[in-house]
Length: 93
Image (cartoon, rainbow, N blue to C red; front, side):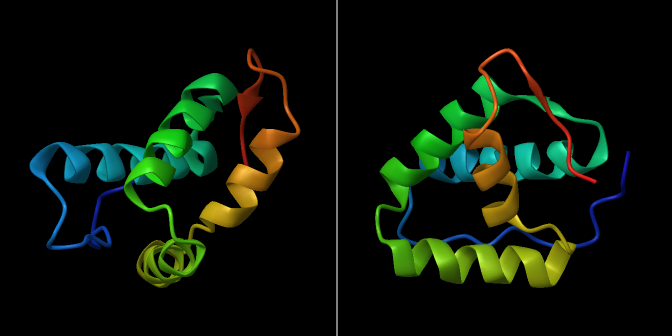
């Protein structure tokens, strides 16, 4: 397990619940790289993330910020996960 030495990209206008859900989504991205996560769990978290961040440009901005901080690429994880079955483990190389 990695030590968190970076911060998650957040928007000050989000509610506490939205912040928790976005942090949960980005933690699932980390898990996809570090040990794997169920496709279904990841897609559910992504769908919730998209409810909070419906704008594609804002999503890209947040993802770039997260990638810069962590080295993990959310776009690649989600693209890969969408091609998997709900019961599959999403594990990035």
